[in-house]
Length: 375
Ligand SMILES: [Zn+2]
Image 1 (tube, helix red, strand yellow):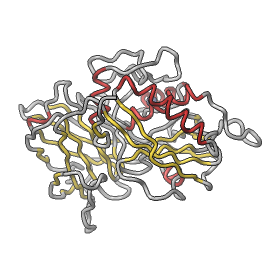
Image 2: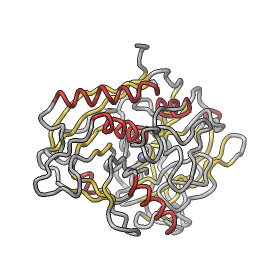
Image 3: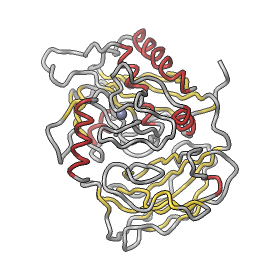
Image 4: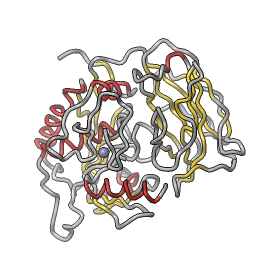
């Protein structure tokens, strides 16, 4: 990560307060949503240059494709090249940082395991087939590693025949004692309603399929792009994850702690990776405590409207959407998004509202989004 990017990132967090921002001899594990017809490739190894061989995804009948890649614990990797059937390169190299800014198809760094939902309809014709290579990254510095190693990579892909016009996404609320939602099912229902108001324009409806308490959740959790153990620990006491269901963790104080820049900053919401569904701490995290109000502050009474808007923004990240414009000026790669949009880097602003058709398409492409009937 370059110092300037580090600064841009932390600045983003300081204001918005949120980010966005297999192998060996172990037997292959199935991709995360059991039952779906994922296609798998033979596991490959990262070579001496830190790169896998080119892996071919054959042409398919469909509108989008999700890739699931898994390496070994402690291994970070990124898409290092992406070339379509015409020979056009959409990703040419690994770039330092949490996600690629110079690529024409943007993806985020992966730790151990990740889902990559490749966009469609923005020029990249995934259904004609393509080749992809992955490259090792240093988890500590988010920079490309050019040395080889033993780690292997297992790849599976899931073509989606049609992106649904309307989608439904299942949520589970994991509520700590630090949250204003604890012990208040009526507030949970109201939050869900407001959240659905925010998502309606995107054609997405969320359902609350389970609620569980997190009695032992820490009062304060510090984390960073690849330092997610604290966030993972928040779910330790929770029942096992549900299939194709996004966990929304209502935690205590959440502090983004960039080892390269500045003091830790509180966030209004956090999604560890743009493109959720696999890998460590794959969930959406919402704070329950203000970080400066320990010792009697108790759960912070955030207005539900604003809280729902931030949660909708975080679900946008989980489903694969970047900020419409990052605080360092990097625009997303969607042709129809302006800055004034719920995926604005400052979602609390009144003018940050609504979704564009391309964002809607990206949301509904995620394999966890099921087709929903018209209301
Ligand atoms: Zn964000």
